[in-house]
Structure formats: C-alpha cells, structure tokens
Image (cartoon, rainbow, N blue to C red; front, side, top):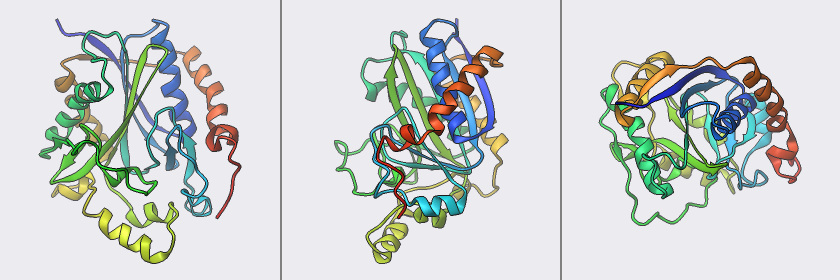
Length: 277
C-alpha cells in the first residue's frame, strides 16, 4: 500500500514567505502534526537565496539587486547563491527516520531526486542524474548553477536543476530550483566579478553548463504545466500518493511571524552589514 503525503501548492510568494513556510512545515512535521510534505511554489518578486554559511559581501551585487527589484534571503540549506525567477521551486519535508530515507545525505538526494527526474521525463525531456568525478573542485564563483553535485539533474550534459538539503529537528528538508527560463544577463549582473572581461568569460561558459526547461522544448511550457508534470513525477518517482493540503490559520500565523526573521538584515547578512558595491 502506497504512503500518502501532503501536497501543498503555495503559488507565488515573497522570498521571505517562501523560506518561512518551509521552516514552519519542518517544525510541524518534527512535532508529528503532519505527514511528509511535498510543496511547490514560485517567487514574486524574484529573489536570491544565499546558502546558510555563504557570505554576501563581495559576492552579491546589492546595488544591481535593488535595481532589478530582486530581494535577498538566506535559506536554511547550504550551498551557493541561487537566483529564483521564472522557475518552479519544490521542497520535500520527511523524517530522517522514514524507512525510505537513507542515512547518507548523498543517497537521500538520490531517493528524493527521482521525483525531479520523472518530472522532466513527463515533459518529454531526457534528463539524467549527474555523478561528478569525486565532487569536482568548487569553482570560485558564488553562483550555484556552475557545477552539478551528486544526483542533480542533467540534460544534454548541462545542469538543469539544483537542490540543497539540511537535516534539523529529525527532519530532512530538501528544496530545489527547476528553472523554466533563465535571464542570463540579469543573473550575471547580480554577482560580483573582478572585472568585465572575467564576467563575460564566465557568462559565455555558463551557457555550456546550465539549461532551463524552455531552452530544450520546441513548445514553451507555463508555470502551471510544469507544476502538473512534476507533481506526476513525484508521484511516480517516490511511489507515493498525494493529498492536497490547505495550511490552517495557525500555520499561516507562524509563517507570518517567521517571515520577520527572514526579512531581517541580521539573518540575511549574518552580521556582515549591508555593504553595497
């Protein structure tokens, strides 16, 4: 008999709300109030999420972020910065003790990312898992979509989706970015490079390393079409049933309270100070 998880379609949210809701869901699942959850959401306005341990100063161009109307938020998971614009973002919250969840972070990625793999296939995109040569040396760039990690999704040798995972309060939180289209000029305007020559070289190289859904489809798809495909993908890839979940008022109040943390400069800049370049 297949297990039933909650499915929460949050629609579009602000960067602070999106991160706050993931944390609330983690808390509620940790307390046994809700079963495992699959959540889908988008970003309005667009946001840059920086990794939990990442420094903002010297890597993010805050002046350009303001100019583009892109909000910065620090997420609970590690890794490098991600621009969330025209994309579907997913999050999965499941107990570390769940019988289907390996103890190894790398192997848990494989289990959870099967849903993403099947989502691409539902769109007719021949995706596959990346298996880097013993985790290639980290590039000096602050941009997340530079190199694939273990079991991230690749299309024609290019990184198609990026995910990050943390484990807190006995719960695995894995969330990730599934780009529908990418504005590469905007993306590279949001990060700091030593000079324009280096920036242009990085931008040209990026097009050979990353790809969005509508780059590979003959007929572009919408946000709602992508949601439908990836919902089917998680049903198949994780072999689960999904029950629609509407957050109760108590949960929404907790998310609103946590939003204040994610909006704060103390959280987002980790006491670095807001240094514009």
